[in-house]
Amino acid sequence: MGYKTPNVDRVAREAMMFTDYYAEQSCTACTGAEKDQPIVGLVIIKDLSLKGDRYKDGTLLDPDDGKIYKGEVWVEGGKLKVRGYLAFFFRTQTWVRGK
Image 1 (cartoon, rainbow, N blue to C red):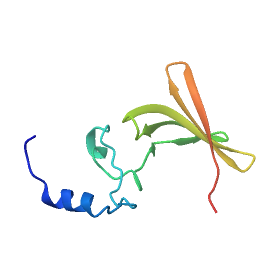
Image 2: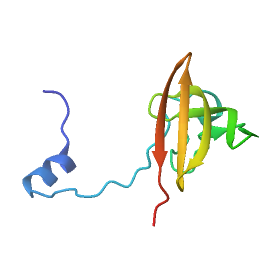
Image 3: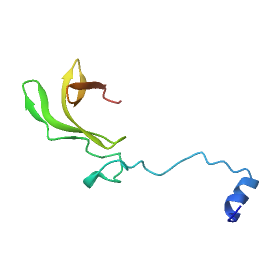
């Protein structure tokens, strides 16, 4: 075919195996200030305000598809419940504190 790749060809001949990947995932599907920002450390829950026992009227960013949803969060049984809405449909995730 077209181009010679001597370094890649040498690695293939020597049967070198790459086992680690060091690049950070970034939010390529996001828009605005979040575009191409590293996912680790990205603020995905914004503008919530306390209403009763829940934080509501905020937004949730899904870094996988870059979409922003209306959302709310609350604690139930020591676990954080995170709910995102699309019109009258919703999905709730349960987040557990890591050790």
